[in-house]
Amino acid sequence: MAHILLVDDDPAVSAREARTIEGAGHTVSLADSPAAAVEAMKVCPPDLVVLEAIFAGKFTGVALARRLAETDPDLPLIMLTRADERLTTEQLDLEDRDGGWIPVDRYLAKPVMREVLTAEIQRLLDEAG
Image 1 (cartoon, rainbow, N blue to C red):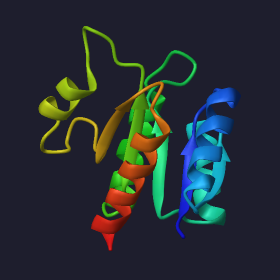
Image 2 (cartoon, one colour):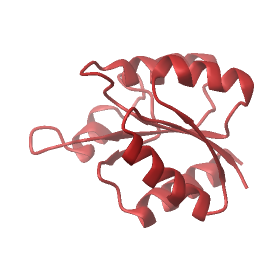
Image 3 (cartoon, rainbow, N blue to C red):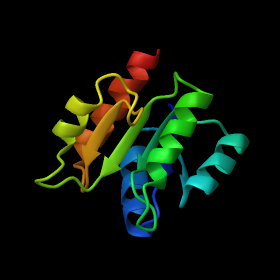
Image 4 (tube, rainbow, N blue to C red):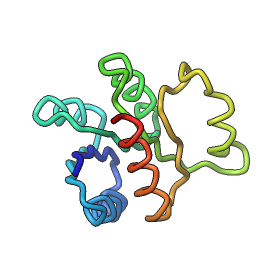
């Protein structure tokens, strides 16, 4: 069982994703902003972080991902985003091969299917050892 930090400012999304993650046998901490995520990490460091890209119309999720990657380069990060025809998660993966632009391990388009989220969490946890 791993501890997952879920960072999203939409309570409905957070509740749904938390149930999914807990259903896979993990514990979940919730944060509704990047600042709350930083504080939550001080209290209980997670094994993996699932975070939204945009908070209150700003790309502060991206800034949080960069901060987390600088603090702990081995911490697995999954970014949830509302990709569309102009910017798909596949394009994000192709553009960010070196991890420099947005240093996350996996992009998932919202709404994400339960099976996809739990499989990606497990894959990254297994890779992290």
